Image (cartoon, rainbow, N blue to C red; front, side, top):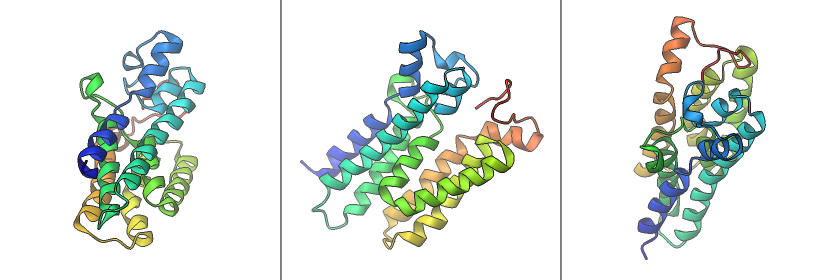
Length: 206
């Protein structure tokens, strides 16, 4: 089978597994979508009072996206431009997380999954982004701002560490962070209006 026809749908399906929703449903008998911001991501899961489940969600969301890219790299190893398929699979995994078919296409914001994709595509870039995230978060205590700044920085590091410059790679390296930033549009409004809550606040919204 054509590696593209197998890798892209597989990446989307892996990305669409709503681990945050499933973990809270299984262990707390609750719907995470009815708590806090209604987001199924790790931050909202942690803020719901289930910090352990939040960490598990973070690890699983990161892992599923990493796996999607890893499998694409293996399936497309003999292609003329295997990195193109890996980048496209990464984008498909993020789309699956943000728009999961199982939850009416209402998913997370793609931060943890984005980090998983970046780790698989270019781990030096991912480590730089993690450093950026931590610096911004420790300075401001805003998870959303740290996520937005780190996502915006990805093209800078990605194009520095990755030699490939095909149209698919360029498009993917711009599309993935842009999607993550766009999914934070409500957070951006609150940051601009001064109403965004810092991590640890009881009124925090992810």
